[in-house]
Image (tube, rainbow, N blue to C red):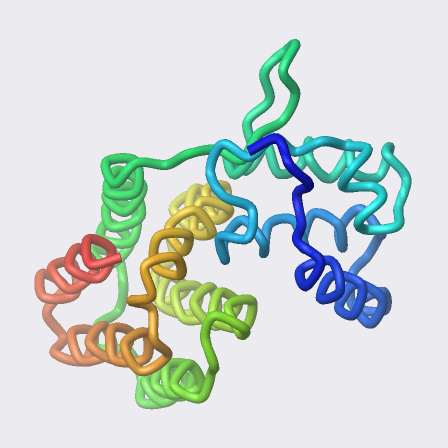
Length: 226
């Protein structure tokens, strides 16, 4: 686990994808953090891997300071852990850890469902179904970034059907943990685009029943399946 962080194919991929994102990402640190995060989710950087600043800086053609700041950001999201004396490593998450994170999101969104207007309007239903169907056209794992963006958009739209701002703030404060839940989905090969689309459409169906209890149950199943 002390070898070079990226294989030669991975390094080539990094070089191709970093540059075009300059206009999209606010800073170079954002880009570097994004790329390391992506490789962790896809499993190129496996749990326990020692993330050496100097080697990462060489592989990504950036300064060590940029890498250091990117790793600090990733540590704050939980994907990377820092230990004095040993530096940064890719954090290992057990199945139990993933389940607990799922329980937190199910609880938050379930509570929001109790305050939500259900069934949502036809325009909201149409938007939710549109987002879910867009997932179906993705190619995983290559399009994992797009999947995560659509997932956030879907759940954000669902959350906005209620007026408790604190619930939304709590969800947003934990949003980075959604990346953690994506790790086992991608690594075990169970996260096909069709499966992800269908899982979200089940939530739309539950919301359209007009029964908050069914939506809450649907959210629990949604996150526990993850």
